Image (cartoon, rainbow, N blue to C red; front, side, top):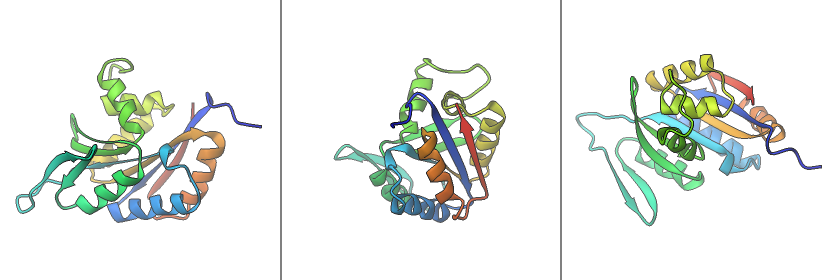
Length: 175
């Protein structure tokens, strides 16, 4: 029996480094988790001694800078890539299906009054406001968020895999 797709859940893991987040994505992929359900969000790093830029080639966004190899690899695995400026946090990079959810919030279709477009996107996925604030704070502190959005079975499987990774926090949210 197939699960009801309207009953969507989310699992969110916070990682200290991009290498920890990359290792988690690799574990999810090895476990057979559908990469279309996975998104990664991280703060852009701007330093005086590294040129940072973005360009589009062959319908893909490219990142030129300190974490270029990381973002290039993530964006090649996940469905969607984007750069956003988040008030109070600054520049963030997003890979995965969360991109379209943020764009919908930016277009005003689903924005919640006290939340940023990013926060509105998370809240629309069934994540409570208190957690949204926690996740935005993690981004501000240069952490990486790995977000999986799917059916209960899909998020349960992903959560089991993520428990074995170097996550500093892991939570499940039901819609």
